[in-house]
Image 1 (cartoon, rainbow, N blue to C red):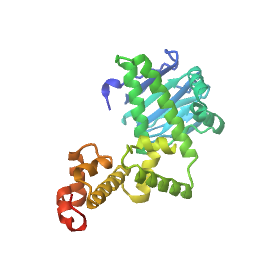
Image 2 (cartoon, rainbow, N blue to C red):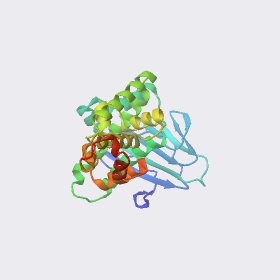
Image 3 (cartoon, helix red, strand yellow):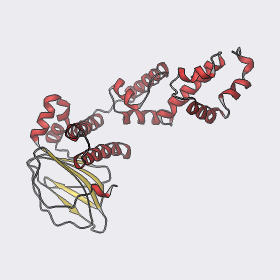
Image 4 (cartoon, helix red, strand yellow):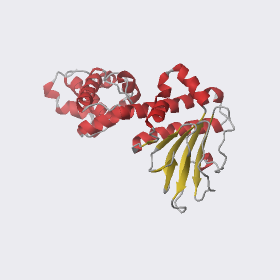
Length: 293
């Protein structure tokens, strides 16, 4: 974790900024903070420590990857069980006014907040993959707020909206999990789409945009169905398409460009790793099955 992004913990429980504040804390000992409330939302991303958080009088033990959402006016406090264990977390404060401005653009920004207020569910567990994605967005926001890069004033609001929307989407998809049949249909539709677009970009971002699901959900579907990452599946499909094209008479220098490979060296290495020989060697071995060009 980048040490220069850490903030010394303060018992201050009010905001200095108009819209939001974000911190990365790592402590071995904390001054006692009694149960308190805020006039803003607090998002709490737990990284490490032996502790619980008490919200509205009920204590919740935390594990790595937990995201805690505390609405305004909700009493809460941290309960440290072992001061020897480092206590690490991100804390994100954001005003209702700022969130209302986001919700004017799209109601999607308010799904999580409404869910927390109505269900009184404050803790959301995440697996390591999902939480890594959240951490990345948190780090981008911290780096932008503390940096002096050109365009900072424009970039920071984009990072805030990206983080808030991502949290909403993550929780929404967990609360609206698809049935096994729907999951199977999605997997089959994805494989059909990949088969038909091998000559185009097939990144997780592209697929997520086409099917309106998160890229992490897509990654899980492929791992669950065939046991290999999606990028490996796409690579195998592209190599097989190149192999078949070569066997049917297409020149090697043309085949790899037809199926999404950007350069010959990358294609050469991937082909040899997959089939145990170079494209030219494979062509020579299979010379009898196609007309040489």
